[in-house]
Length: 254
Image 1 (tube, rainbow, N blue to C red):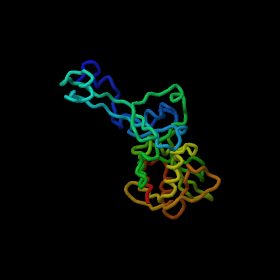
Image 2: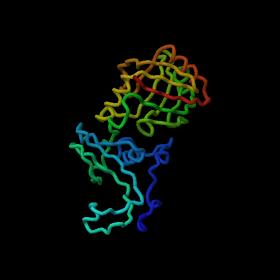
Image 3: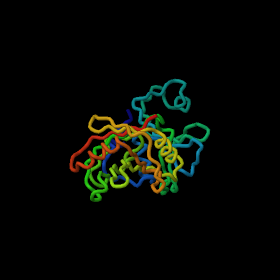
Image 4: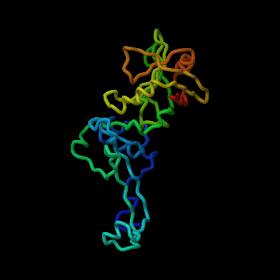
């Protein structure tokens, strides 16, 4: 192992070290993109277009050895030399090839970063939350959001994809999930469409509720899907029991 750069000099790449129920960085910022990379997600800028260009992180590999005939040996490094191949970020270019990448000033100041849509298994999106509902609007709205007690325990897209989970009563009678995905990003717009084209199953404390497809509500943005029906009402009745914490899993699937 290198005597110059030791593992403790690098931030760990264990995703659990970057999962937090607190506000970390604005979605779409370069800081946010770095967090997604350390969560082992692929990221891209919207200005890169739909050319298959994205970034991915390559973890550190320790205790390698220069072998005879290798590129390092040809370049004059002694055969048998021990070294570490350090963590770095790779860029996949439009031709499908990878090269080590460093950001430009424009990249670091940009706010058009998003998750590469091809990162995910498009057959299944899973989120696990702890939701402690309160009555937000008397007699109308109950639920929780990330500014109160909502905690994200598992997220198959990002670190905080679902920012709120509500039951809207009155004339609506619908379950609402607010997704932190931006329709102005090509990759995230594709994710939104894919999610909305799937059925939703919600499991609350081990009991499953089949909500089906979202209700098309023209006056609401695409990133806030609404779900109606008897199963949704059952979850709504649970959310009206304020102060209790529910373990909730949302699964969008075919």
